[in-house]
Image 1 (cartoon, helix red, strand yellow):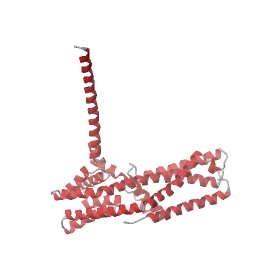
Image 2: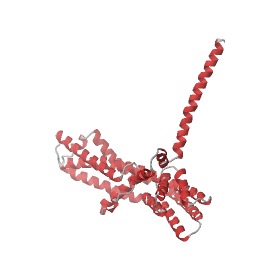
Image 3: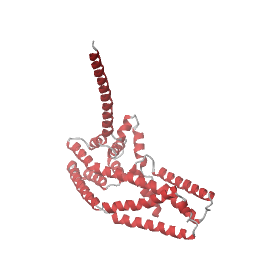
Image 4: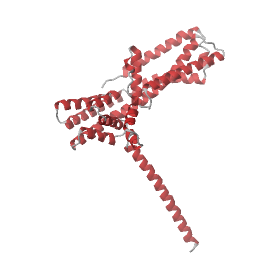
Length: 333
């Protein structure tokens, strides 16, 4: 056999080996990506062998803990934090987030006071005020901003998915499926977050909960008007009868029209909303960054008696500005 033929065979074998390995690798990646897109968190937990009770407990881990029952501003703030953590779905409860923030504020505040006293600045009232502002900025404000951003993204995705879920539900009803079976279609065909939420509803119904109560709990968890209208439609149809598929089809059209109007309003108010985000986050981020890079920039002036009054007025003006700009961009559609 000539040397040319041997070289040709070797090159063909190398090409075939590389081609087969590449196909195996890309085939595995495509299958993995398709599986990740096709299933939601609940189905992945079922595939991993988790029990239904564990799945319900894990998905409902961010359920309400009753923080809103406290009176006054404290109750409103804790209730708002509870809703943010529940919507962000970070895998921890609102109580755990609150404990983490309190611990972070305490540690940062203590370290700053001890360090400043050690370097000779003295534990003045201005220093205490400055340390409290920095610890609250890093331990509370920045985590809340991060959680708010994550919660807003998940709520937006939930609103975007809901009309599609209604269409699938209506098609299931028209095909002859009962309501429970049509809900199971949403649990198996929809991605997160709505797929796992409807899966939680089907699991609760399977364990004996009333369907309307399970759907109402889901609507209360997300506090979306579209979900509340869906629950009302099911409740009214259950009591008075009628063509549920037609009712939900009309509801889907109304939701899409509302979403179109909402997007127009968001487009017209985008400048104000972006200004609100920048004016809310920039002062806190700048203050925290400058203090970490050059703490002496603030500590030198913290011993001045005028610093206490000036810094207090500055904080008051910041919160006043946040309240005003939030009211200006809070548009109801």
